[in-house]
Image 1 (cartoon, chains in turn orange, brown):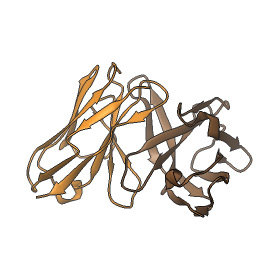
Image 2 (cartoon, helix red, strand yellow):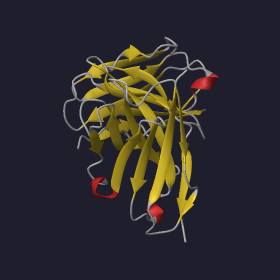
Image 3 (cartoon, chains in turn blue, brown):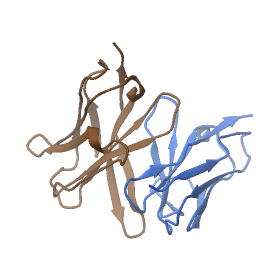
Image 4 (cartoon, each protein chain N blue to C red):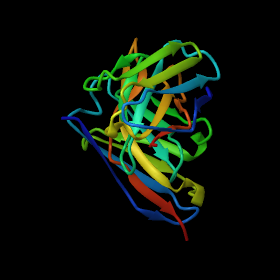
Length: 107
Length: 123
């Protein structure tokens, strides 16, 4: 199975800040990497696919980069509704695997 | 509008078998290209993918849980069913079903999720 490692596990930031989350795969997954946002008590929502393509309706302050084994999710100009936990997921092969999550908290 | 809704018991005893049902709306489990997965999340922990079933009845399972899982579909009811045997307290989690989206760019992603159902395993 492909192991996905996210860092940091949590980050404190203020409204208007820029936050970057890293996701590393234990083996290459090309650009087949997705990102999800999850708010407390809610199901995850689909943010990014193909490492860098925004799902319809996702604000442009979200951006993704990377290929192979190293990926990033950046949130520019952090908004109050962006405080949540973010997960990466390799979409390259089965079994699908997720990272451990990064909680973006209010400073 | 695409929706998925999980149903099943909120409480099961250790060693029992869990059966969860995912009812689909806005798309059909038998339409070419449809794929549905189950994912679980223990309280305060990360997401874990469990199983997938396709429109043509192809099935895929988590490596670590394969011996305990069965995924099936009911085309007449437009539902996907997951069974998990030998339940243990460590299986306490919110269980989600999700529609799987596939393209050459995206690979296999989960674009629509149900609200989830919390299943507690306790005697």
